[in-house]
Image 1 (cartoon, rainbow, N blue to C red):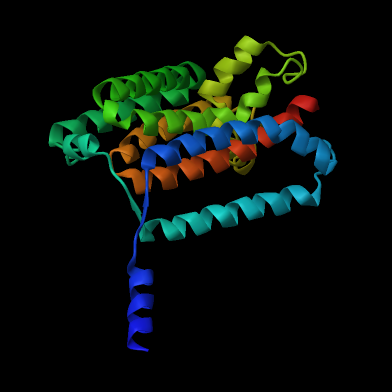
Image 2 (image 1 turned 180 degrees about the vertical axis):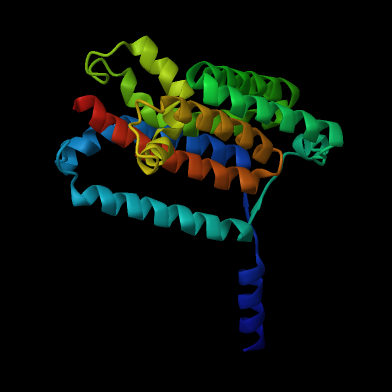
Amino acid sequence: MHRSSAGSNNFMTHSIWLSPTAIYLLLIGLSGLLGALVPEFYQWTGSDQSRMSPIVGWVAAGMAIVAAAIWTGLPFVTLRTDASAAELRRPIRFQLRTLFLWTTALAIGFAGLIRFPMPVSVFVCVAAYLHFAWFIARQQQHRWAAAALIGCMTLPYVWIAAPDGTNGLDVGWILLWMAGGMPMLLPAGFAASWLGQSLNDVGWLAIVMTAAQLVIGTWIIRLGPKRTIAYLIGCLLVSTFGSFCLHAMVLA
């Protein structure tokens, strides 16, 4: 009995060793797979613009439950961290000057959004992508996490690359919109509905939210692989649900 109890305790306390890079690659592949299956899934459910199949809600709830289960189990999983990444990781410190600059930039940005929402939102999004590129150049040990962030944000919309995916719309503009606003299309749609406006009237909101998602992602990546994986799963869910909604709107 004593040996059995000890063995059980060892089993419970034994950590599972996984490679963060492998998980990042898995999330990238899963993002592309889900994006490619969006049109087939839409057709399989028998949904249309006037009636959404109940299967869609069940699948969405199932995906959310799986994500919640993974988030719950992450603290009990030990991830094998690359030695170079561990050595180069530095504590994040916020200096008074940095906080002042961020506060000033946010104040100017909010004022600009009120007056010129679309140009300012595009500028903010471009600045976020430039910051992301700078982050990759300076923190190359996080390149796979950064690639997974972009993949989870954009690859669920990969069905747009199909010849008939855009229903005759210009692919170039669609791809720009995919990078700028599609990753946060669904939250922006909820916000527009709450404000009593059409998404077309507040399209800039999706662009600003995407920029914020990218900046927050670069910050979370520095906090370690577990937080990064949790954030990536959330980004993947949001983009997948938004991709399905966009596909329904394109077919309208």
